Length: 76
Image (cartoon, rainbow, N blue to C red; front, top):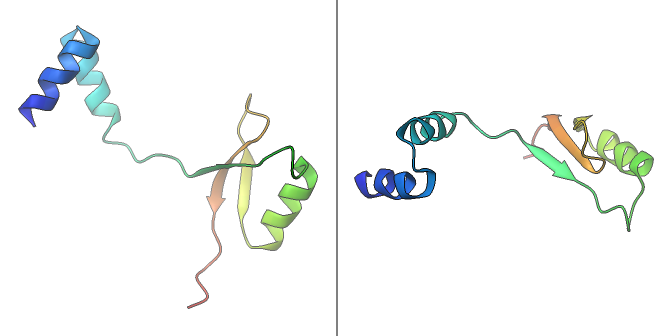
């Protein structure tokens, strides 16, 4: 682990930046998805996702990106 901190110090230069980076690494990533606008339009994508049990929320300023709020229950 110490070698990683040393590596981060080389990248960030400031100890406070490394501490902030490592702090943010503690948080889980948001589940997100994007659609290919060459293959499907926004309305159809939203419809397909909703029909399959997903609850999604558009990510502001990312036209093709959505946050997954809720996923369908497993059918197993």
